[in-house]
Length: 240
Ligand SMILES: Nc1ncnc2c1ncn2[C@@H]1O[C@H](COP(=O)(O)OP(=O)(O)OP(=O)(O)O)[C@@H](O)[C@H]1O
Ligand SMILES: [Mg+2]
Image (cartoon, rainbow, N blue to C red):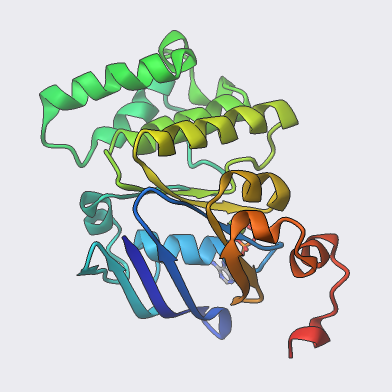
């Protein structure tokens, strides 16, 4: 479904992503794990079309363009950004409705909104509340609900567990599995490696902008490279 080849992304003189290859097949949960500053968000934002980059990104055989987020959204790629991107001064319902912005099929969109309300009852119950008054976990559900309203084929989730309690993290991860069961394809960016590898099919471990390991997720759970990365015991020299 998605094919990334030799992706290079820089911020001025900083090269944040240094030539990575990544594939996502239809129906998969693919994990992109790595510690702070590894380049995970940069990869997700490049795929969403929010950045300039070089290299090639193909989505269902269509070549994506840099800085073309709206086109990518219409093609079926939705990003739930790191930090959720909720507008706190707007209501829950207003935030949710922003997800319908690319939709032309208004009647169907209304039905989809009802489905989201059913899936996330809290968003229906708190529709008139200012989004900033929702808990972190509730805001994450809102961000996911909003992304789903664009009817994505590929959902990019950037650290959905950030700042959530273990219990809320479990809820969000269970929901990601539900969404996949319903046919969605997911790129899951996370630092919670173990939990992420338990629900993912395949994973890429990113470090300083490079993929240093990839493979079936379950096989990476006890991989020393993965555990050392997250325990912080690897020295940078090892990779040079
Ligand atoms: N807007 C920016 N301007 C300059 N440098 C940036 C910018 N955004 C990210 N970087 C740098 O690019 C590198 C990769 O950052 P990125 O946010 O992609 O990492 P990450 O893996 O998502 O980290 P985290 O887990 O902390 O979210 C880091 O060195 C970071 O400092
Ligand atoms: Mg990040």
